[in-house]
Image 1: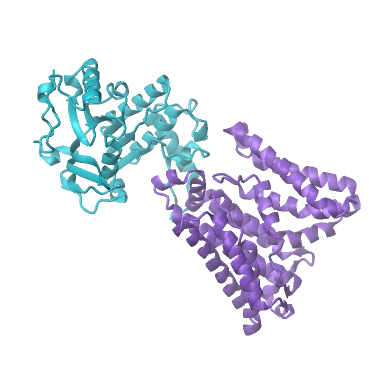
Image 2: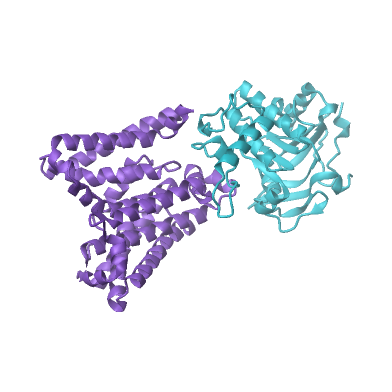
Length: 276
Length: 319
């Protein structure tokens, strides 16, 4: 097993129940430096609970989280932000009736010491951010554009650009392509590639393998509170992966021989036999 | 970009247009009244009370909340002002205590809304009755003179006549407007008010302390209601136990006329400023036009509905 410090974040044997429902049943999950991890799973697989634990929203019943090799104690939402974990939420956390430049600095305005906003500087910075992180020229997308008038992909892009600008080391993308058209999805994927180029890491949560496969380095499949599969993209073709997913959906297991491959929590990488 | 300015300020331009049309209408129909300075001096003496509260209420509405208790807070604080003044003979001390009481009353509204997660409409219906009732119980329906306040220079500073003609309170209203505009448009806190009203969940996620924003917004409402109560009482040199009554709907109407939608998230101080003027001149204008007072409510209703319809159409074209 890799030393914890070799990965950006490592979650070990995470368990979480809500009442009598065991949502996470001993999950091991890690994200390396400059790695894009696709987190796949059906509704109720435990994806969002896992992420909420990672972002400090929920406390796990048991298990440990390591950030850059250091065990996290008294973990909270504020602490996660401090560390550089940014979440791009499904609902994107934007203020739709306001301009792009205001949204990028939402909650983190550039102000003088009396709290007055430096509008000129904030607009200039916003201009630079959409150019640099989103690849937009100012003629294609004005910083004065009202966010509510922008397309779904652009909105997602603003949220990602914002996270990158604020030096997030790990960006969690919560279903970033849900409800988007094909071309909009392509835009979002190019923004995700931008995360990789900037040397940062991301977790791409989705239930659509076709969206995550092109951009992910590694794909983790979660099913009913367990990690049931983990693949390096380089080692598996999309077709093969789709087959595996169908198998999981049908049987809750991964092995085509019919052997139950649900692992015990302590051996998360027990699926080598499944690699082509 | 010329069009950007226009499109960003279209609601403000349109409400200004409504004001000009109304003024023009009044001047044409009764030139003698509306071309003399007297009527404007009269407007400047009466409009500031509800204008100050409307400006302050704009922040509450932008942040997605509503306050129905400010007229009662105004009344109660007028009572506090009067009592403290008679006990100490100090206008300054009475003003200070009164505004602090107003701030506390507003803070309580905010606390109830935030901590108990109650809708502000419901909370402030309750506190509205509470403060009005408390005022009635304490003063037993009796008013009190404030004539001795004229001995204080503060009286002249607050409601005196500048150059013997212009009521000082209009300067206070403009100052309050400028201050709130500065907060709303140039300060981080103002941005947070907008984000809170636009999408509370988003604001929270992005680190905006939504609860704090709401509490402060309700608190300032209480403070300005108290201040308006002092101005209104000093203007007539008498504390009426009914102080505050009649301000509720006109003040709220001024905010909506000004283009701040009830859902919050957007809205302007300038719009409310003009909205308050429109509300303030309507009654006099209608009567000067030769229509009976019975017409005022009807015209109020028409103007408000038309203006809100214009705002709604303009907003939809933006989004």
